Length: 228
Length: 327
Image 1: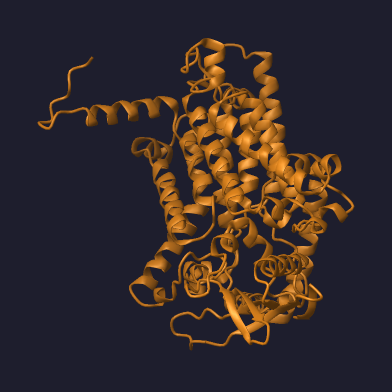
Image 2: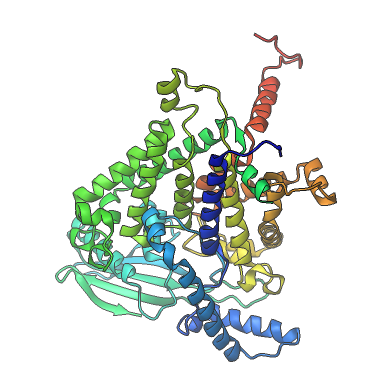
């Protein structure tokens, strides 16, 4: 570093950069997301809380699963609320620019992942698979459905009781596309097949849970049956 | 201390690396937006449900600016997409580089506001970088701007402000580190069997292929080792900053060791391998490529030039190993 005087421009630049780093620092703070009671009901979260309760108990901080779950909801709510209020003044700018921080990437791997299934029924026929994720025999529109932006519309939310709004819109959209190109199809069904990834040493679990089943008929061209 | 901070952001360097980041980022985004077009998803992603798309943004309290100005129909979606394609291309070409970066970021933000569910973490990261590029002289070399201004694609040879490159490095460090410390799931830890990678590769939403066979040894042990390396790499990532933002005062043992062995390259190398592995096993779209095009920012332009000279020297040797005569 030199002893030469720094220009006014250098000082202003450093000030602006400090401001930007400060604002983004608030956004980047690795605070836990707000955990709701509903989220704690899913098997991955339940398992998570139980394991952490065991770990904490093992190191001398005795706590049972329910109490820890309740504590997680309270503390994450408080911290999340504070974080949100710190971010509040900058939200319009961040929204306009689409910038921000928040990198909880694969924070909690999903041992009960959902597999997208699209089925159709032709006039007088039975249900048949049209698309089943990672099934080479049923790979209609595979490239489209696997495309990252579209995947965001149907994946996740598998634990919620009812399908997310975007999942319903996606189902309607896919049904409309199928009806448009296949005149003999009278019914489209979109569902998520939830599987269980077990680890070595655990008994394999081949059960498949059908969730978020949305059935759309051509005549009504709207969802006629939504099962959680 | 304050002077040290101001001087950190007052460094200057050749414009080559920032130009490489600009070109790489522009091309990755151009490829992504062309993929949307190729898959026939332009109207699906950016019109509202009333027009056959997936967006509900026209019915919310804060309607995106794009919808307010141009509506939520197919023409509006096509115009937005055209703007995204055009600005990503002009950014890569270096034509109105700063304006292209700014406009691309704003349009990209609108595409996100219209259908937030289709926006991934990589999109936000790339918009952050676009914001930095919009404030930089990323078009000073290897650009149409340079040709127009100086008559030569190599520009005027003058150094530019180095802070944009250092901010990109800081952004990458923040991303890796905070991604690491937020990995609270038990599968990332020894008491969860370091099983996270195995679980993720068996998640239908992300896996490119079926990876059930990883349950067998030695493959499973390899996934466990990878989890350990990932966690170590992400939790310790801030040490990279010692190289790019050297603290005041004489270096201690650790800093001397880091400098002697250029150890920051271990973290950077692991990161690059990590992204190549993701690209070959997971269906995450532009994520690995969007990350890798930012990696040149880790190189000082002088380092890049030295590498280039060394590589050229090696390639231009005769079969007997005798360097070719200089032209």
